[in-house]
Image 1 (cartoon, rainbow, N blue to C red):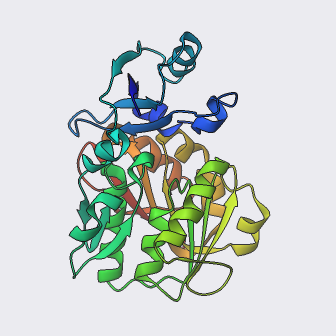
Image 2 (cartoon, rainbow, N blue to C red; image 1 turned 180 degrees about the vertical axis):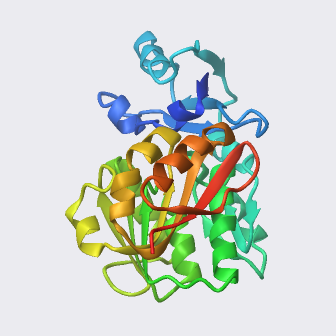
Length: 297
């Protein structure tokens, strides 16, 4: 890679990042596009980086501009012969959350012996555990298992990279799990990550079923319901909109883990779920909170 284009973006724009092959369908060598959160104290200020083999054209820059509404692309020439994508991945440090250790391929050798480790490629940085919401969900799941909770039927809605579904199966290996996302690319990525991390794909105990779904609108979700554990690390707006559908899919007394929301949005999200008969078990702390709820008994 010899050219890099960088744009400032929001977290939502980073989450919605499409596949480079789709963006640059007419290119024989589309760029590699990655997103990162350079400052954890500014959780809505992300950066997009696009790495090109050749100097990008004006049309290429306009495509990238469409991904970040309020940013001008910054172009720089990079030293030839250096794998800049790998270097950028190396900059993403592993995350320890409860018993979990989430790392990029660069940090494979750093896995602690006492941890449940997952490898997630940093080119798909959103959802790797670098973001406080994902790390918070991992820690919440760990606390649930430590408290004696047992689950047999798990749904991870808006799975992204599959990480939270993998974590649930690691904690409750006899459970059946389904992971869905509205983005087909996310499901392809989850399948690849499942293979890398030794997660079996299938319908049985200890296996993960995958589906492209908009919220709860999929026959496999309807067939699998009711769930005793539902995880959704998405955004506050969709969480509120999906509250009736989520509640309808729960077994009596089920556990719900919700994330992707700011602390200032928590009251609105909680109100939507309390209206469906859910009660608060754990509100979480920090700017990005994780809500743990219990469904109607």
